[in-house]
Amino acid sequence: MIRRTINIAKNATSIGNALLLGLASRSGILGQGMLGMREVLKSEAEYNTLTIQGRSPSRTSFRVELHALADLRGFLDPTDLERFLCWQITEGSKVHLPGIASNQPIHEGYIRLVDFREVEYFFEFFGDIPKKSKSERPKYYFKGAKSIRNLKQIRAWSTLNGGVYEQSTGKRVLDSTLFFGKSSVIRDFIAFLKTVNLQ
Image (cartoon, rainbow, N blue to C red):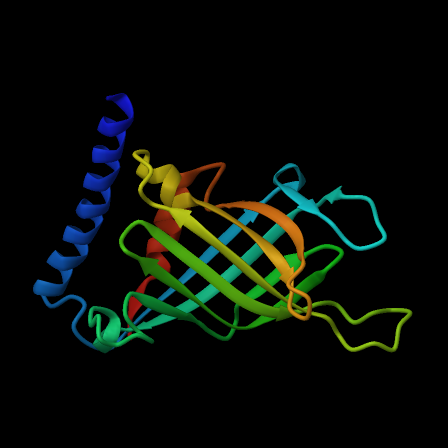
């Protein structure tokens, strides 16, 4: 009975998120142009486990700065599979993961709202240039999601669980939990809102 009540509440939360976006659509706010934003997600070493072949697992800090644009002409069109509820990660985005990629640019990726229940994050980046090797620069990708069905919506929208993978092998090299404004969610959320802009 308790589990059923929780599931009903979570479904109601998902419906609420959908209704808010629908209201914005009907009001014309999301009808044209581009919607830009900047988001910084980070966490200390205790939240990230790095596993590199030939080494013992270790802890490391992790920081991601994302610049993204959504084309509002397709953002609310479910027939537009590329742009529906999707932001494309753009120039200026970068990742800092000691031991893997030190302030390396993100080449491409996206942030996508899925069924109003979770926000998927995916992006690709090159690792640092090997110091004592003639091999090519390794390439990695990050894949994760925010579960926005959580009844605690502030925590849901500010916590990103995921991992970093080797592009060539698919091997997971980092288990991570990133936070948006862990020290002061309200302050950082206000700063985030200032980066949102219509173009």
